[in-house]
Image 1 (cartoon, rainbow, N blue to C red):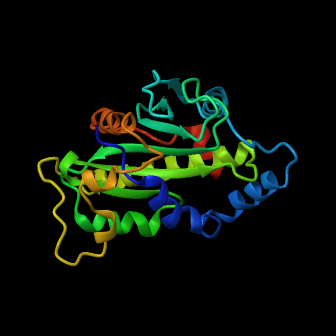
Image 2: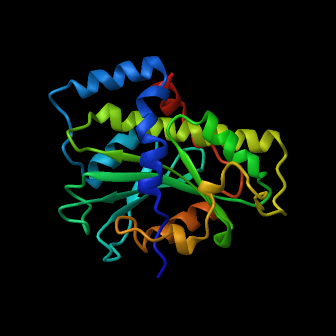
Image 3: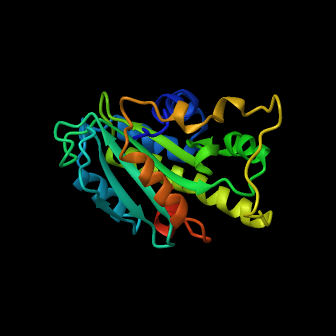
Length: 240
């Protein structure tokens, strides 16, 4: 079975490396305070993720273990949006405990999306990267979270909230543009976003994000077909 896109490497290079430059100043100050806290998370469990998301009125449900070495949770906002948290490097992946890495991601249809929309998204997003997967007719948007060296609970929440704000802005922009759902992204020759467009056979080869994750991304893309709200009031207040 196909494995999910090599999002961890791509996002880590494209978003995480620039993270502390592009996070808003007030949010960055809060993140720095968390980094100095003695109560840093060296790893996290599914229960930790569920608790952190509950602060944003988001419910998260651990999915049945697929035997791929990762644990995944399906999350739903109070505005009907669906996204996924895939946890990696876990001491017990079946229970999703003792994990040190995660990717927060979602899927949306690429139908009717202008190619330059992805370039604009990457210019304006806080922490999220988008990868077009033409043969699956969807775009996967994701943000990595690492705990090596420790990460504060509020820092984890900050990254998640910024991901949700990026997604909310993207959805609103597409709605304002009156995006059609009858077309599929067709990159122009030499387009600026060539490095984020590939077929799934190339993108889904990863030792860290495995077969169970692609169906989750596809499920999210189907669920998010109608207009949904990614950013809850509590998540918005957290980053403002």
